[in-house]
Image (cartoon, rainbow, N blue to C red; front, side, top):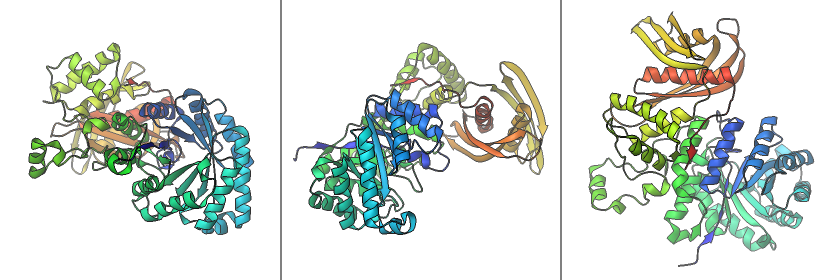
Length: 525
């Protein structure tokens, strides 16, 4: 078999991924994801677009200082102000990269840039030269390359390499390409651009037609040396090439591609869960590699085959992506050691003090459920260690409700350690009543933009996981017209879905009340 070559994995979860509607992250969350990406083994972390906002500049700057094991990249348009701002954010990085881009397709030249080919070429070269004056590692992207005339694309690529670009990225910006087309473009660049050996060819594919992973693999097969992707495939519109899918395709079919990456694949599922929890964009059950059903077998024929030989219906081992082969079922008689071992296997390296807190919650849950699954334990760890400092802590509720009548809700919380309660008769059903009771008790006015509930594991006694998005509004509850300010997310888990809803609402309210304070997490293994 041909000797394997190693390609770079360029992760843009913190830049392109954050452009998913509703996926914005605060600085602490971005730093946490950046550290998880380092543990995952990505080669390049695109940390943001520094000139886009003060928050983006701060996140790129902080990640540049915090991360030394991977290249930290900042995006910039081909203009002086963008490039200068990118370098200002990146200059303290151990391995900085400036990523400049300019559209090259005819539709972009005519309608967006209003520039001809020579003007685009001149600006691209000027942008790369300015970036190279700051930094030895410069990436250039001809935006909408997949719809750019191949002759002009070759001219641009040759010119920017001469100007100092060390990586040339070929984006399928609108997800228009097909695998055969992408293969042809990369092959043409390798054959027609005389200085192509002085740069790494990269590819950045969007998923508008569901072909981002296929197009990326086709590009790698044609000789691309870097793939740009995101955790869970999040990103603009339909998203980006999914990191976990392209990496596991290369690993599983190494016999075909003869390609290696530096990715620690056992970190894929924990990293996927982290990004889902922070962004609020949950992974579909049938998502390849990291979805809940990815290694589930229900059909009798499949189960029979699995019992006889795993390879009959599994082309990958669950262990290779960070899952255990089967759930280790724990119960109320299980001890701390078993819980700590299971938490560690799931990616949570917790201190003895943290273990005690999780163990106490585990015992309460075990009295409610007969069997505790991996999903339950992960939820306990995330619930405990993903929380902001709490001004309001859920204590309990009582509720009476009947069809056609507003519910009566009595809610009990601790506010900074002091017990408080409120009773309301209002709302369209129990959950709305709980929400209104929380608003009345806290005096914080919000609007619920999104409410989702799903089972953590299986069975009628499964824990409910509730996630909410609240739009913070000006003024106190009932004080007049509300003006949208900011979106805050909350998450709650309980075998009682109403209790989980109350915890989720309070978690989001705590974000409103306390602002974006650093979150306390266990050290991830």
